[in-house]
Image (cartoon, rainbow, N blue to C red):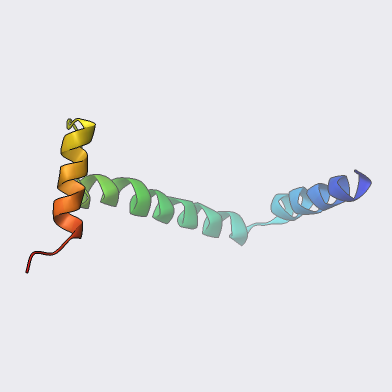
Length: 68
């Protein structure tokens, strides 16, 4: 338990002492938000929304198996 506490304290102290790092972490978090939330809403619509399980299964089956 003492080792875990010292590792946690190490990271807390490190983040507390950062100056430029906080700005970089903010940029990283904003980019992740844009990539996973905004782009998902705009470019990846939920094609299976509002369908019952049988319709979902049929839709997936039609799109997974190519027709010859």
